[in-house]
Image (tube, rainbow, N blue to C red; front, side, top):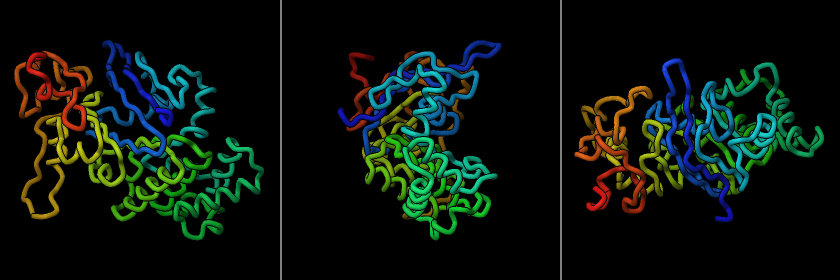
Length: 325
């Protein structure tokens, strides 16, 4: 695709320790086109945030990429040095983290932080950069942006700070945004406003976005496609409506059944029995099979790859041809 922004192929991330090597991501592959929003969903520890960190070159040490490739706008970036990656991060790839307070420097006004970011990456003087900063804050829906630009982060509410962080992510006109749980710290009404804002930015400016979340409701409202992760692997991927309305992997189905129904009351929420396996105790075969209510003979023996499952793809033996089994 000529409008393809990001291509991740066979990504593997490992953490060496004194007992051996822990494989945190294993053969993760996906693509992202201009203007498209890809939702990455799964339980805590599934590898969602780690995938985003690998893309922007901010893996926590001693983690490192041991296999696979990451291509951004036709350029391979997984082997770039720190300086080269820094020039891409912030200018061509914007990031939004879940806690806006830690993403902002409390010692500087939001205007100083925005102007510095803009002038670092764009050929604008101080006056032009300040005008762009005010325009970005207005675009994100921050009331009284021209007056509030000289205030400090602590003078803003959580939702307002997140709008500032979004303005920072958009400041240098990036073509890709990595949004890692961007609404976790916000109340529900503010969550909806922030997600609508991000979706609008992607559509209006052709920005691709990888949205990391555990919230299926946010996925349904915001994303074009979804990738479901479990134990460091993508277990299902496809158009958002296809995956959410007809889950092809038992894990995705379990996530959907755990959502409280809106049309009637229920005494107990359904849950997926068991827990995600530890990295140092990964079961053979499909990593989900010890928790899967539909597991059968090959599940505990062989790891399934992604295969066609209706309009999506699922790493599940339920969708394999009988000849393969």
